[in-house]
Structure formats: structure tokens, C-alpha cells
Image (cartoon, rainbow, N blue to C red; front, side):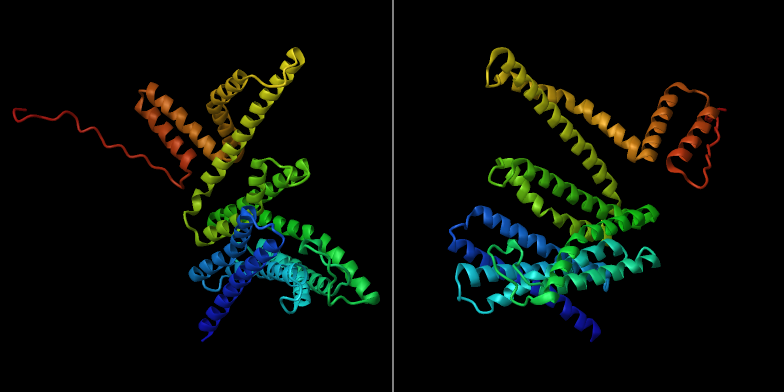
Length: 422
């Protein structure tokens, strides 16, 4: 009965998020249709947002189907429930109170539901960093942090739910909190709302610190699990930083060129990488190939960045030189062709140098092992003394494979075969 009740609860949570996201998409489409802003860009954004929210419970269900009762699976199932409520309530309030007033009941209640569920999701994401991958704390000392996160989420939820004044501008129109408390108590709640929002960044920083400390202490499979998770988190953070730099550089979304808009749209939904990487790590599917993925990401990411700098730097410098000498504003086609050929010629040498640098810096043991094997191969071509080769072979095995014990057995020479007449 307990197992059946758990399954009912689990699927109820997943069904609720699916229903909230679907209903939110329909209501938001109606709002956009009323304002004549329903286009292909919104459809792409809406589908991406739905995928971003529902990927988390999907991975959570998958994890719980393989590891029953795993805390990380439950956190993934519950983490985006607050955001699903928030998105649905925002779309409902926009349609019921702004786009088509009076068409739906309880529009003010939807405004209130828009104010606070997101803080619960933020707290669950912090817990994800504190408990990944095995669902336990790093040590007893971290219990204080868990209670701090719980206390922060309670204060943040209550303060946001009952603070007076206008709701966050992201709802799309100006509206006051219908359950806001007036008087001195309301002023205190409004002050608490500002404080708890500022504390969001330190809480995520604490969770990141916990992940770093856990990875430094972990060994074996747990270390590989943490590599999956921390690599995905680092990649998502880097994407968001790049997104912020691009947005600040152009000032607005409408001023961005086509490639920047595509990157911006994709970067908003890059958080789906986190549940996917965590699910792979927990289920230990092809776990140890994460080293290859990290290595290739570092190599080709750095290579792409360097080649872009060289290309745009050469084109910009050439254009500035020609403009100063000849006054031409347009760059000759020959310069672009030459720059492309230079990039093609630099690709292989740069890749080899970046690969060697990353191997030396991040994969030192593997780099030393590769160098040892290369040196041994060179000696094999020149060395003829069998005893010296025996010593070299044992040394190479010890350095590269690091076994507990090495023994080398050579079959004795049987001598020349004798014929029937001997």
C-alpha cells in the first residue's frame, strides 16, 4: 500500500506540472493573440519553456524508476512545480485581468499565486547542490546550512505572499498584491522581500561550494558522478554569463543580429542540461566517458574562440588599414578569402597545442603516461639488449597502469628444432 501511495503521489505531481504548463501555454497564446503578438518566435519560446520545466520531473521519474526512494529523484520531480504554478498563474492573470477582463474568475487569486511559489523552487535547487549525488549531506556541519535554506524559503514565501504594493513587472501589467498586508507589518514584509531576494545569490554560492568540496573529497564512481553534474552546472552558468554580456552589449533583444537572437533563445533553456547530466550520473550510464566529453569541450571550445578572435581580428585590422590608406569602406573579397585560408591552416596546429596544454594542465597523469609510452616506443626501435628491455617494460607498466605488483615472465628459448635424422 505504501508503494502504491508513493506511486500515486509521484504521478500526481508530474501530471499537475504537465497540466499547469499546458494550460499556461494555451492562456499565453490567447493573450498574445489578443495583442496581435502571436508569432513563430513566441511558439519557439513557449515550447522551449515547457521543455525546460518538464525535463526535470521526467528525469526525476526515470531516476526513481531505477532507484526507488532516491532523494535526488524526488527533488527533480518537485523542483519546477513552483515555477509551473508561477507561469500558469501569470498567464491566467494576464488573460483574466488585462487581455480579456472578466472572462475568467479568480484573476486576483492568480496574481497572488504568481508572487511566491518560485522561492520554493529556488530552495529545492539549492538542496540539489547540497545533496547531490547520493542524497546525503557532506557532513553534519552542513545541517546548519539546510536549516538556513529552510528558514530562508519560509521567510521569502511569506514575505512575498503578503507584502503590499505592486507585483513584479514580469507579470506584464501593473497590479497590486490582492492579499498584501497594510500598515507597519506590510512595510516589514516588503523590506524582507528585498532582503531575501538579495540572499538568493549567496545561497547558490554555498551550494556550489558544497559541490566543489564534495568533488575534491570524492573518489571512484562518486567523483565521476560529480563531474557530470558540476560540468553541466558550469556550462549553464557560462552560457548565462555569455547571454548577459550579449544582451548588455546590444542593449535590447530587437537590436541583436540573427545569430545573437538564436543564441539568446537557446541559452534561456540551457538549464535542461542539468537534469540530463544528473540523471546520467545517478544511473551510471557510460559514466566514465565524461572525461572525454570534458576534454573535447575544453579543446574545441578554446579552439573555436581563438579562431574567431584571429578571424575577426585580422578582418577588422585589415579593414581599418585599408580605410586609412585608401579610404575604402568595403573590404575586398580577397581579404576574406585569405583570412579563411589562414584559419584553415591554423586549425590543426592550434588544436594540437591546445590539446597538449589541456592534457598537461588537467589530465597530467594521462599526459605523463602517453609521454612514457612514446619514449618506450622509441627505445624499442633502437634497443637490442633483452635485459634492458625487460626493465624498461616493467617501468612503463608501473608508470602508466600503476598496478600493485608487476611480474614479467619470458618463455625460455627451446632451441632449434631437431629433425628425424638428428
